[in-house]
Length: 231
Image (cartoon, rainbow, N blue to C red; front, side, top):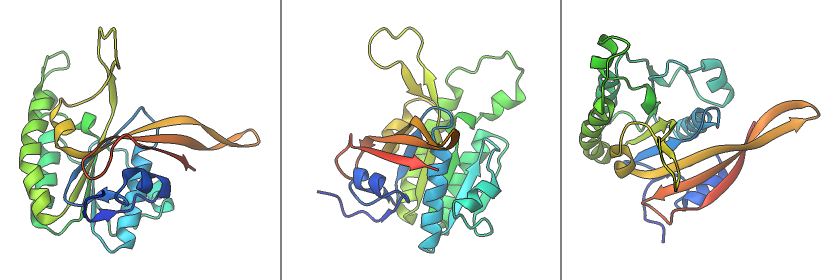
């Protein structure tokens, strides 16, 4: 049974079906992770376009400083209506995120990406300095504040995350996401997105075949998969 949660379509029918509730849930935290160029940002831009079509206000916190407005426009995003922020530090990014959530004026917030949320101490420090667990602590604190605020204002927050390898893992999966464990716990939905092949027209590659796995789902049954094409 799918919980009666208000959802926004992801722009991909097969993914909406895999999620079980017709899309991603409002008022919750969502994590999308995968290897590089697997289509994480594209998926979120599709979602923003779908949300804007429903008349919702969206914000994009671009910690990677890599948002391409021309590409976003091609995906159907209304750039003039999109709130874009390019923060200097991780704390600033999460502070903006929290302020937007509290304001109640924004319906969807996208943070791209968790790996690029660099703590202030690290930015101001030297190159070789060790900052063990600093990012994880920062995120953990932010999550505790964010969850309640998002729920109250019925605002969805999507975190895009990268994949890292754990060292010395003999058995099981050596892959992990950046930024500690807090995000894993607080996310209501976690999507693992992978590129499985290329779509070709003759010799030219025109798109990607992707497989999206719902690794965690608090609003319907998890572990479903969706195969989609990103052109």
